[in-house]
Amino acid sequence: AQKVTQAQTEISVVEKEDVTLDCVYETRDTTYYLFWYKQPPSGELVFLIRRNSFDEQNEISGRYSWNFQKSTSSFNFTITASQVVDSAVYFCALSASGSARQLTFGSGTQLTVLP
Amino acid sequence: DGGITQSPKYLFRKEGQNVTLSCEQNLNHDAMYWYRQDPGQGLRLIYYSQIVNDFQKGDIAEGYSVSREKKESFPLTVTSAQKNPTAFYLCASSGRVQNTGELFFGEGSRLTVL
Image 1 (cartoon, rainbow over the protein chains, first blue to last red):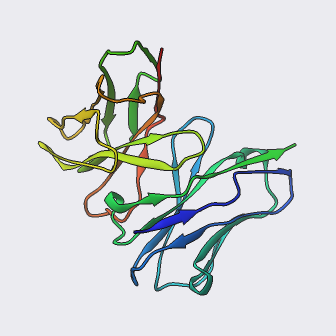
Image 2 (image 1 turned 180 degrees about the vertical axis):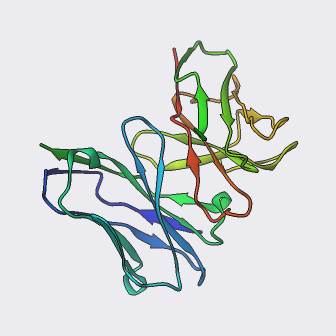
């Protein structure tokens, strides 16, 4: 069985602060894929990143960065210089095969960025 | 623009009634999915379909039914057998070749049972 834990239920920051969203996962598979999705108030989830278990390089995309550490089974997401538009629920997810059929989502972190 | 359209956005139902949620996509994707989202919980898979005229149960299929008569459409029926149907329902799709967990979602349908 696989499991994704997002211990932070809600986070509030003031605009321009940096914020890190934690994600810890459990799986017995040696090959797996990790994902982050953003759910803005409009409701639809938006894909942000996919990372496979063989690639531990950190990734940066604009103000977003991801830190993947197999040793601690974590895949944390950092937003630098947060903006009000970053306010959303963020989901971390795991799939052993990479297939959407086997996607396990965490419970999500509600991020509120205050002006 | 390509995307997924769900309707209605809000729906109220009396206990004992069936209700059908619509999901249409123009992304030419083979695979489509229905998820349920409850407050403070992650998404849970109800049903999925990899191809027209074929669909499979997900983790919480009891009390739900689907059909896939056209590639573009994947309606979900919440039946009276579903004991706790009040929830937010999300439809998603993915291309077969790109089926690496990257999903495209609609804006959801919020069902409330009165």
